[in-house]
Image (cartoon, rainbow, N blue to C red; front, side, top):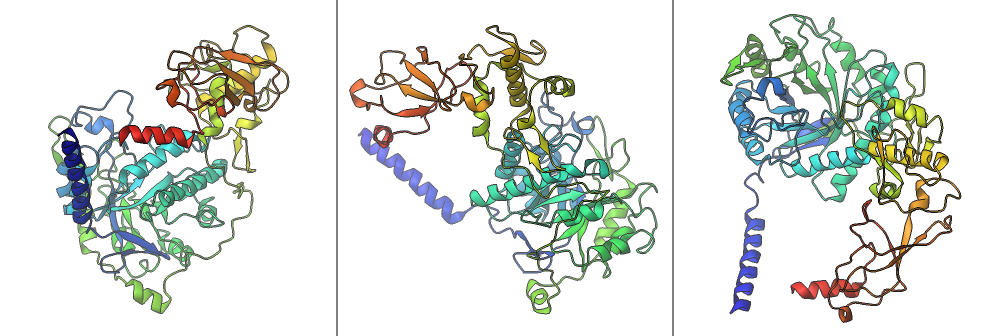
Length: 573
């Protein structure tokens, strides 16, 4: 009887899966936007797509009283696509603005976006999403491309990739904004490379990944060339453009010069932000030019900045602080009229190919040479690999936990004057990246402190800046102090000294894989769960890699016998 029930349940699950595959998601028929050459195209009719958009990112001080359950402690941003209270309230106003795209700067990948994304689809609105969030991004003055950033970017992609109205992802926003921080751009290029590779490996649809740049006079021409040169290129390029103020003109605003500059650009280019507010209310007279015949051969539209009125006076609506009522400002009416009256002439993909008016995105663009205003290596940082950083957990000194507003420059300045820190350094100007440069800040703190420990401590438990930045790792296993204090020394092999046992702890031998250590340690306090002893293989001669936490509570075996896998499968089937 029980077996019949099990079979019935499995059959029902199978039928449900088949039904899901046949019917699909309710938004499967929504057309995706493709890039081809220097233009966007709608997949349903093959016609060119122009972005008529607006930035849509509420700040906590504007919307926190209305966000579902309020803003959790520690959060520095509101995800506008995860709270139906916000998006369902605002979508009718977005439709009244005649927008077809919104840009969101931060989303929470752990939350569901189904309600908002499906409602946006019903309204015919696409989404351009930044991959970063305020506390996790490529910082221009101290750039890094590390395991934390990569994981964040991958999680955002995983969270949003299923929605066909995701137009693309921004891997960075104005990271290089003047000649003093041009060396930050290689880190954004690495982010583009690894995000695109993640999308490919996961088998997702080919969602474009691009960059949003500022319009700094001294660096802008280098930047737009850099992000389409070499082996790593952006799929689109956005410019935050604020040159047109009030009732300017195509010639006097600088739009003509910028349009001429991008005439042969090989990927779609658009205004990722626009809307100078020196004249208020903003007339948005630039909208007519942006979608006029002088610009549409080059530009693919743009996104006005921004929907919500804040202290900087760039909003088009005001949100009542108590009731949450949406009050339309004069800027709203002006922008709505501009988008409504703009009917850019579209070309079809086929016509563009036949007439050769579409730029070839496969052109081999040469990277800019280093000059006074551009000091950037064409070498990009390596892909972060958390496995390389895992060994740091075995070191004697570990990070004691950090405050988000803590400045660690004095810590590294002091210790790196005493020990070699080249293996954690990353320099986008000269293209040098240490082996552990992509490890987390906590791991770098631990590594540098442990180097200091081996240089200055004999047998004590003294770590530098103890209590402030570091603490002694009570799970540390002493090793020979011969040779370098590099993390490589602490990658160990585990050799089982007896059969796996169900009766209690198993003694393990720890041996230095690099051969530097002379000592052999015995661990006898790591319990390993096992079934009946006779069911398990003799693994006395097998070598495994230790991947426990700092206190030796868990073990991850990287190489497992097929026999064990077979036993596990049999247990379930």
